[in-house]
Image (cartoon, rainbow, N blue to C red; front, side, top):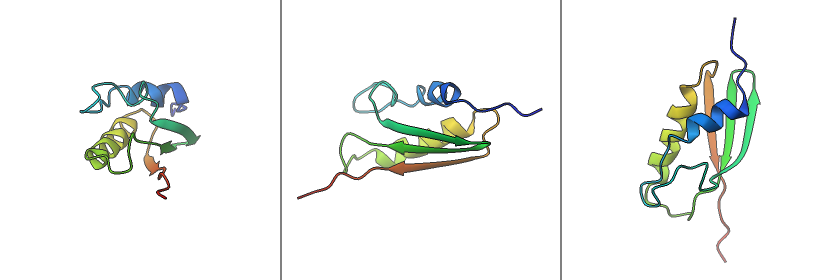
Length: 86
């Protein structure tokens, strides 16, 4: 029997991902804008503190790895929202 993936499970996993500059987890920092779950697929919409965050790629990879570790998850995608520059 497969475990149904819930938003709470995903957010709990993401709380283990710490921004190295701000030293808080990505959930507490409000980086997670939306969590969409379709069976074993999880799509995250995120917004980092700045579009040129030096740790962006590392943070995104850690988010993917954390969510992929949730029982019942087989595919994870992370979409970064981009701030418009004038």
